[in-house]
Structure formats: structure tokens, C-alpha cells
Image (cartoon, rainbow, N blue to C red; front, side, top):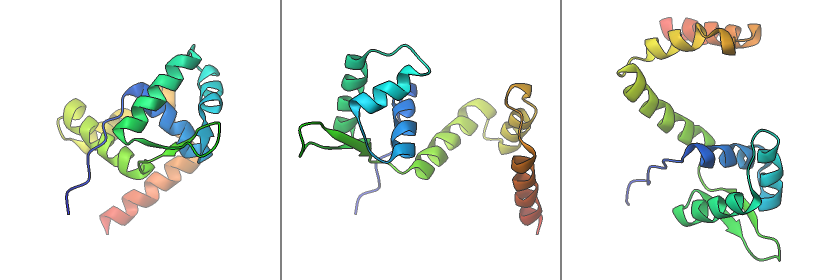
Length: 128
């Protein structure tokens, strides 16, 4: 059995994956409409990106109907863990504490009280 292929989605591919992970399945038009809410994206660019993602194995395409329906072919949590590991290694010299300190000290993305409670519970469990 061969090792699973490491997925290295680009920033644009990650935006599409986020939409597919939240919707489960979507047409190119549906993905494009979601992307257009936050950025200026052309429909043909979205279509081409999703075709490339299908070729890479990042998404699956159901072409049994007239309108192709796409879904993520990669697991959200595994992709997040892989990309987080790369980021910790490349940006924080392998230091998870530096990542956490930077993230929690960021005034632009403040953690909610609920998130802080989850973080505290995790820290408490790690101490035991």
C-alpha cells in the first residue's frame, strides 16, 4: 500500500475547498457565486481552477448530469493538519508555542470567550 499523496493546495484552491467542505457538493456556478461575495473572480477562472483541482485529485467531479457537480476529495482536518505543520515548520521554526502566542496575541483576529474556554480546556487536558 502506497503512502497517501500529500495535497498542497494553492490559496485559491483552498478558498474553493472551504466552499465545498461547507456545502458538501456544488456546481461551478455555486462555487463562483460564493467566491464573488469576497473577491473579484471570473467564472471561467473558477471553472479552470476546479478542472485543475479535479486533475490533481483535490476534488471529485460527478459528470453524470448535464451540470457537473463537484465535491472535495480531500479531508478537511487532514488538509488543515498538513498545512498547519508546514506553516509551523516554515514560519515558526517548528515552534508550536510561537504559533499559538502569535495567533492569540493578534488583535485583528481576537478569540471569542467560547474559543478561549475551548483553548483553556485543551491546555488543562495537556497538563494532565
